[in-house]
Length: 192
Image (cartoon, rainbow, N blue to C red; front, side):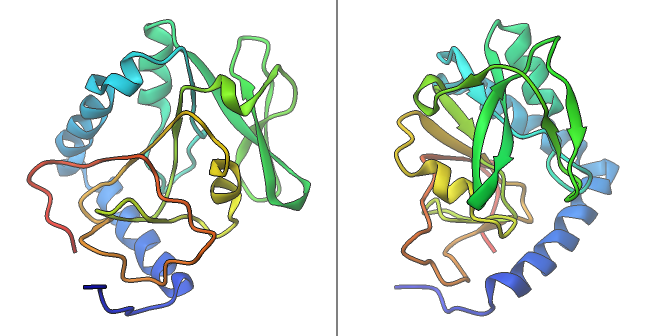
């Protein structure tokens, strides 16, 4: 049975942004976050990858620096997104020579570097604000990841903190929404 649609994606984004902010700023949640990162690091998809794609997180987003550090420490190449016109994006290898700059939207993106093809990434860490146990997500509203995931042949993975996980979508799942392949959350996490 489909969960009742309780709010628009826009309203849900506003609510989830506040909930995620509060969760991330509460230092008592650090062990929960560490456990979520460890579940990702222990996953076969992460361990068997040669190249991962991951965003450079901003304040009030799940910190991606631990993911980047773990990948690089295990000789896994890291690629980060750069936005393009028409709500498209490409991924650029994060190397010593890669220069980063803040966009007008506040995101940090590479301004130079080696662009890699979509099929060169084994794993793509997909950000979001809300996730359902059947692997649908609400992102930040640009549609960049849904567009990118179409035709992506690697494994898409998202990490859901307790405040982000829902049993079923409480938002309208649209035809262009692409479910992620794997959702990482704590075993004891109840869906909202």
